[in-house]
Length: 390
Image 1 (spheres, rainbow, N blue to C red):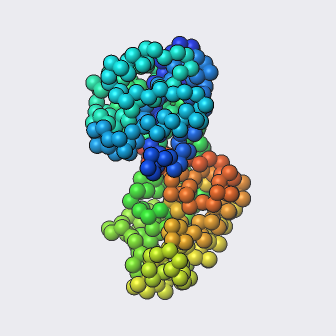
Image 2: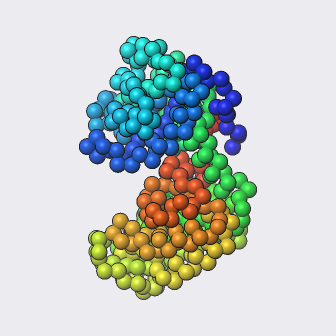
Image 3: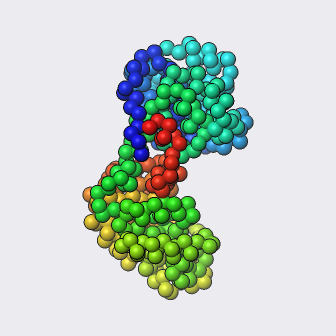
């Protein structure tokens, strides 16, 4: 990864700065349920304002399929951001209108303007160059502070920054630096914790991890595929079809490289996947046709904790159990072990974060909300949005 361009190098006074943020946050009846991503952008916005810039924010929200839809308007975000900044913010309901051009022209230093949802235009996701050429003149320079969408080759992430001087925002820089500590010369041993429902989402991540990890701990639905690949009956547990060969190959490649891949020896199962269903602890060799795996078992927890104790670096993506219906015993125990390990620890993905007790989160070195971009980074994939500001 090349060095990111530094916004500190630019004289920002009087500059009109296009800032790509990610305000794709959960809304319920127009109210924001989680403003983590909005708060993550405040450092960059405040810095730009303090330096005398005019801040023009670009974001998407939801999937409006290329046409205006009031359900996906950024107007509620505008009002919430006003309260966080304690500063009035203007809102432009049509990105490409003359009115928006006038609003930009009337901005004073330190002002903030939010443009309406980028995905109201089909050209955004198509990475349309002509669309980018209409947006770019609104600013003098561009700042990407949305690592979470930087794996997407969309107009506001890829085409626009190619048309002007472009820089990395503070949040994007934090994400790249935190994840680089895992993939580039990490403190060893490196332990990867992989969970979540689908192993297919993490194929490239797992394959790339064989270049830099020492131990891989597999739980959640991802472990079900590995158990099936080892010939165990997983009952009615969710497991993607046709992935057993992948798990076999990964286990073989890891063995050749001297990498440990640990899968459950025992699990908690239920007969019905519903909240408060009785959980039964079973050895993986004793599962029945109507069992549904919802958590890693007691022996597995102890087995997983052992390498965590001696880890220098830990990266975690995906919950280790069906925590939404109470399969969270393993997740909590592993989270506690990681928090107490003293290792450099990074967790990524919304579900992973939700599955970890609040009182432990401050003990992790870095928490990434980026999801797909985090996975692509760990998989060694190119991230257009990062490359554009490198």
